[in-house]
Image (cartoon, rainbow, N blue to C red; front, side):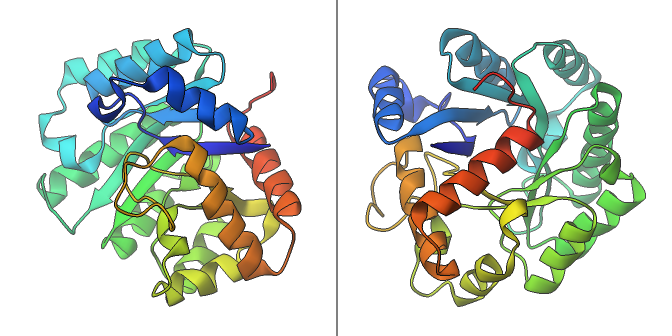
Amino acid sequence: MLIDSHAHIDMSEFNNDLDEVIKRADEQGVKAIIDVGIDEASSKAAVALAEKYEQVYAAVGIHPHDAESATETTFKVLESLAYHPKVVAIGEMGLDYYRNLSPRLVQQKVFRQQIELAKKFRKPIIVHDRDAHADTMKILKEQRAVEVGGVLHCFSGSWEMAKECLKMGFYISFAGPVTFSNARKLHEVAKKVPLDRILVETDCPFLTPVPFRGKRNEPSYVVKTAEKIAQLKGISFEELAKHTTENAMRLFNLTDL
């Protein structure tokens, strides 16, 4: 059994065949999918999918790209959604200094606000960090995110950063890029992250793993990411699947699987 700990199956890329996508995931042993909101509309959509499909759970949040458009009303909507029993996390939230689609100070403010929201609901956070490692760690520490814990999704930092996250009790999640042959730094981190702190994800429809690169990503492909990590660690796929599933169940409090 596997859990896709980070997907965006509410996006338009899945409008025409979502039933088939979920069926393929189930056939590959992917028994739960966390659909992750990036703004008000997608957070609502994630909750709607969680209501429709038994194996889908939701996270609600504001991606750093969308931070500038977040209003007081946006936060009221997130708060109302967070009461839903199938909302298992707040996010994705964080910093993206690669694209800078929202001003950095606005990204930081909205990141801090969402950590506080997570603390109010005692739910873990899903953190997006791209080219913003130092500020991401600074905000996690200053806002005492350790109180709720969470995951650094689609991890792209160094082993030094991973160690800091692990010390704070955070999980490290790997997506399709860990299957790329030139991702040597990521391979090194994946080898070293302890089995009780590792998650797998697709981040679909993005970051499609080998051998499906060039196609739309989907939850069933998380198997390829898990196979690669098992290979890097020198353990069986079954052992890796067991640990990542237990970790996701623990982090997101998935007691009904």
